[in-house]
Length: 176
Image 1 (tube, rainbow, N blue to C red):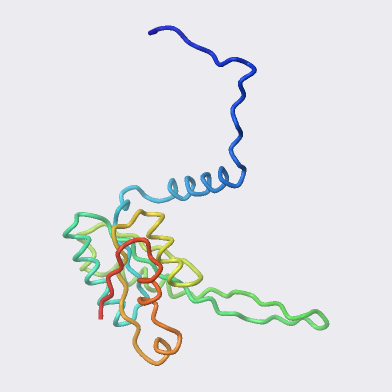
Image 2 (tube, rainbow, N blue to C red; image 1 turned 180 degrees about the vertical axis):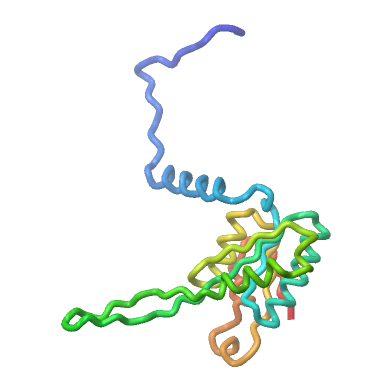
């Protein structure tokens, strides 16, 4: 009936939600709030300044322009493991971040081809495949664009594009 409130009986208790589930939901909600809503359902592109990543960026720009969405440029920074030894103490491994992201950010900010679409640069550290998929999940990206791996290292360890295509939950576009 309109205008009447029905209260629950005192003896009827709600079942508590498991702590791990609620903490996971809170963490997901916090990352959703941290993402700029203007880039929701955008195009994620992996970029490291190499020739293949420049081709992937060019394709992703066109894709974002055609779909009317934002571009999320992701640079996964290399972590350089360094050992520090202080006399009798055991050696300690320290992650020293590279500063390539700042240089890439300045280059992208000065680029004329990015003036027509909204874009952001996201820096991450860790496994490239995992981080690209994670950013794609955070922004609910429509696609992830990567360049193909060239050279000897890609043949031995497997390409980023191949590993990403196997595990991604969204379309992966590989640019040769």
